[in-house]
Length: 312
Picture 1 (cartoon, rainbow, N blue to C red):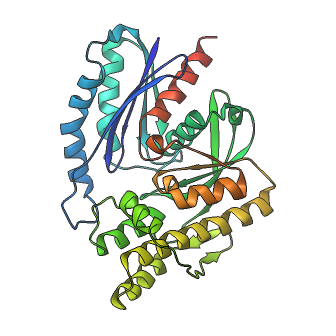
Picture 2: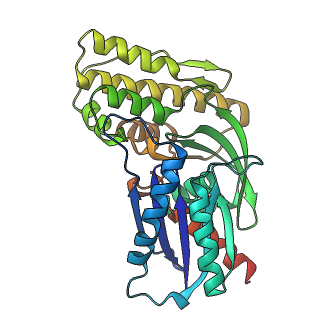
Picture 3: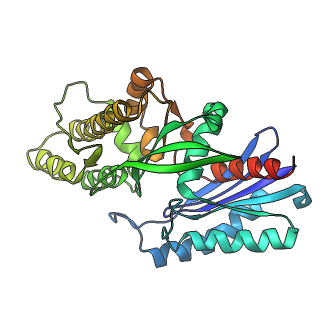
């Protein structure tokens, strides 16, 4: 018995098969972004998802009996709140409806954010979190938020408790990376550069309550660049600024809501420097590197849980 997962986020087309033992086969492909560009227009993202999704699905189910697919899970919007919308998710949603209708199996709808958190739970083996309240960070190019998650049947419900007031962490990383001549998305290359720096930096993040402001980071890195700081130094400063910001947000939220279990999800949280420090400091759970960036495994896992919940 298998569940199919589909996610068409702003920069990645993803498909996944998960079986009842939580074994996964996952495929994904980045949307093409022109060199030096900082992203895509939604109309271009929709076009590229439409071009990429079928070929990925075809590869996923090659030599596979699709009659073994018992349900389809798909991300239909960025966040699990009314009014959350992004056109690129319509490509995955419409495809998922066609497949579910053809196979005559149930279709389960989730948000992209729920998928990220579920992927972190799946790959860290922290299934117990489905049964208790926990604090989750979703940090990526499109989102920098913290939510309180509480059990809700097969999954969880999310309550937003902190956010960025301007730039997302992933946006800051990409802007600094493009400035340094890196390829978009820039997270992996910036991480590699930062690891080569053997000095120290001083950072002072800006918070308003539990919320953060990250727009100043780009200006600080630009000033370092203009003053001929090395790429390694700038990269390390950028990462440490984001790390310190997220750390102070975490500390304030734990003080406000108590010592809750912690999950960090999203592409930014695959950064080796941040992950190592936060694992040691907070004993937190993280997605595996391959499931930190956008993926369909999270929604596939949630759909598997909902299918079992409905059939017990």
